[in-house]
Length: 138
Image 1 (spheres, rainbow, N blue to C red):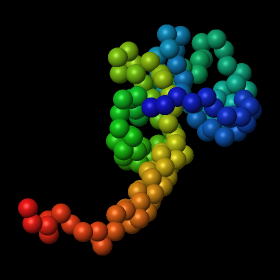
Image 2 (cartoon, one colour):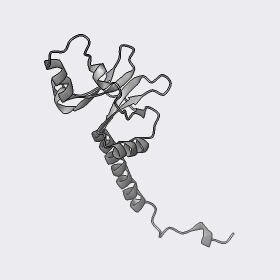
Image 3 (cartoon, one colour):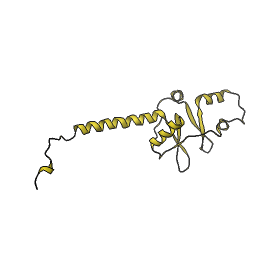
Image 4 (tube, rainbow, N blue to C red):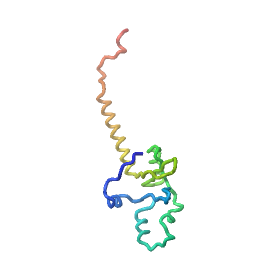
């Protein structure tokens, strides 16, 4: 997985992304929170005993790993109908990124473009009119 900085201002990113990973004070992933649920939690009168983390306990998480093949992750996302999946480091479970469907489509588009270019080069390759070394006597 390649980590790239997000493009746009913080408010532009907030409008574009629909859910976010939530970590505890130790940086361990607790769950995924939708933007709407986070805004609702912020605007409600919540006491100190009500944390956003308490709302996420028991959430069924789908995660990926930084060394995982993208195809495996895409299959798991499709099977569970997840649009965004937190990416963890296997060694310590630290959150290292987030993959969205849009990211997977971007990777797939790059593979398709590469394959088109490869096929075009094969068609342009050596012509079949060149003499073959098999026909020459030795």
